[in-house]
Length: 217
Image (cartoon, rainbow, N blue to C red):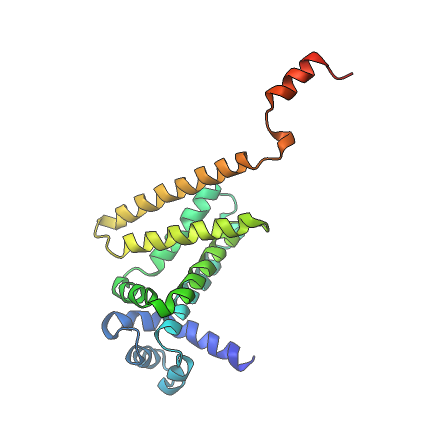
């Protein structure tokens, strides 16, 4: 195993603990030390792994959620669900995975919104959206590949913004918000598919009249 792979695994292993500590210490070296000590890992090694600073810690946290989601909800487990239910299940898993870490999320969102971090934040959102669509069974390789990920990424980000301030019982407001947004995705995808159907598959009154006048022999 190469050094880069070892560091990646170390980051992902420590990330949930760092998120727990970040609620009190922020996304800081102090949070890294706390997580390392709790996990029985040399703090110096942990600090080296996260020498890239807060965004590197946040990226590792997101990667840890991506990995947990892929393990808990492989395509074969959710493949029998309707597509909207697959997406809803995947997003809900991500929300459940960070229960109790709202303050860490709030602080992470503030860091991610900084101008110098916007490009990395966009890539991070794209990566999570891509992971969800792949688990949902999406195989599009044309421009649909990109539009689906951009749409889901924006919806996921908006859902997190609602979630972090949601005080309703069992996060009912967030669940309702997510359901509405997913319904919007499905309507958009259906309308887009109808609009872009091959011309020969679309109904043509002129062609119908032509067939009535000159029936095929």
